[in-house]
Image (cartoon, helix red, strand yellow):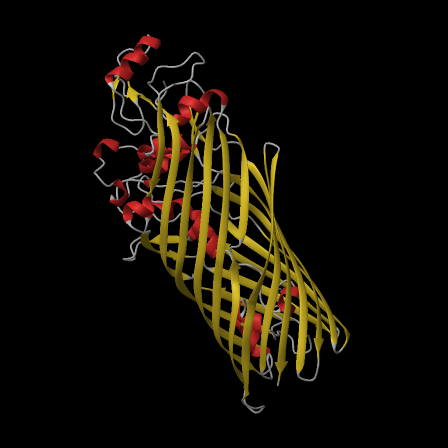
Length: 566
């Protein structure tokens, strides 16, 4: 048999000293934020970086707060509908949920310096917004063909002969392999009886000897390995039926503190310090059914929590005194996160003894029984690991133009290079395994384009529309590559495609009170896989995922902002 080599195993063979508790997919979820804020800001597609004069610009171009000449206070409420449709080889699954939220609150305190000096106004602002919603349900299922998650378990079990009595506390042992071994999805090390059976039924397999590597492995004198797992014994002939579902909850809360300056009503400068609080929860359920009452399921509970901070610098310039054209520029430092990763997992299996005597139908008659391996009970709680994450720098350029008192037009371009993200351990030392995954071709530079327009029917009422488009973060060949000693057991991943936001809005402005209403429709597609794995074609192993699950995600959001200017 050929030696199994592939993309997934390259990372598993990499030596790492600390326990890995995160992947590039976790980092992308954290670094990528939603279009959210005031209803006016959302209604114009977020394209207000050069126009300014809205509290939400505190988080895109801080100089936008410098446009204010009066005080402002507001709150925003939202109602969202989340929809996910998945299609795996013609098997379709749908999930639709509604959820309300308190999305935004902020104020601006404007101080007039005078008309005799170049510095006209110094303004102070604060804004809270829900920067990210992780709310999502997803499911898929169907025949896996020549694939099984158990192959991944066996691949991660290298060095099984060196395991101690408690592999779940061993920094050199990956949980996926330990769970598979303890639940007999990876059979015991091959016995002489098992070897005799193999040689009797396969006379060409000569010169093979027992080899203590995860699963029931044998190798020839050339060192070539034969992997043996429940998935290979059962699934490689007819294909196992796989089933997956997940629930994601939580979000990122963003708190921005701003100071901005107005010079001669021509140049505006702003500085914002941002604080972030993360609460992300993910539950996954994955199962494989081989028929004849043989099956297993793996459940995983994961939580990421912590905080971070960044700084934002911005400027708005009116280059021509006689023209309303405004040019905006902004730069955001990386967000520096200090995070906790908590996890526990449970694997339940019901399998037969592979070396038992078969019945007349060719089915093993020796039933081992039920196995239930629960890390929460073994460790008396969650496993907790700390890590640090540094998101990409962000660069923003914008244009704003007004036509009389009726039209306001905005355009904006933003860029982030996701390949520059960095992972670090609690001591501040680089996690080379995951950082290298981001810097290779797995992650890309991402561009966002925002367009928006506002038209005042009469001075008190305005109509708004906007659109923005964000390119994909991941390369088409990106995969979730768990380290050899990773404590993660949720092997699923999705390569997201481009994101589009379509927005509409309406607003009322009174002498003090104002109210805005906006509608946002967000949509993006993704290629989902329950695992990246060693496949088996009867002769040669290969590292590929099973067939792709095509997923379409959409979100409809209605936002209401109420405020006063005084």
